[in-house]
Image (cartoon, rainbow, N blue to C red; front, side):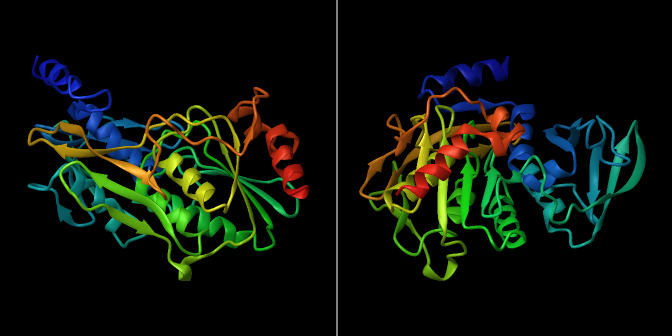
Length: 323
């Protein structure tokens, strides 16, 4: 009843504000944490503590079962820690095998989870070399580790002269990761402007010249489901004429969503501001209009299944040759 009442109240604020139940909040934090996703489990806060709500059957973490309650991570007792602090313990642990204490049916159980160093996880991204000089990277969502994943991928392919970044069907995620990724490609200038409701001064995030890590040809693929942080990346690269954008007009979601955790485990997701591109160009409700429209109907899954035969990738290659 409480969950339903809060949902109805918050839903009246605007279309994007929402109340998150403990399960929904747990899924949001777990999915946003790329490291935790690689461990193959989804956590959720409850009145009994942080529990393992789901385990990935295709990437099952050893010794962990659905319904287990976490009591210790890396030698640190979790009593009194917030849900976000518990999740961060997995990232902060310096050991290659993370010691984890669990409570299962009232009995204490201990196990060790292998830390997934430098894994090109499906959660973070997908990579395919199209030709000797063309590399394709699909980013399904911006999570903790996305920028590092792209950086390490480019380091493995030093001879690449054309990078195709695919953010089709990408709903957004962590804006900081999108900004940091844009910073890898931009020498200078404004990446995005943060305009909060309650503040008169904007926060401007700019590129740093010492961070340029790839200076060759760049293409970004977008569609109608490209939203939020993914639109910030595509839009910032477009206004700086750093990348060619190919695909369909993007979704148009540029509002700032802030999460306010509640004591009993749920959270409020409230709209607190708006993201603007250089020149105060709006993203919200306007989206990003591609430099080249592609309406062939080739889906993301078709591109990933056969990148060397992909029509949209071939269009990117051909268009670059004739520019």
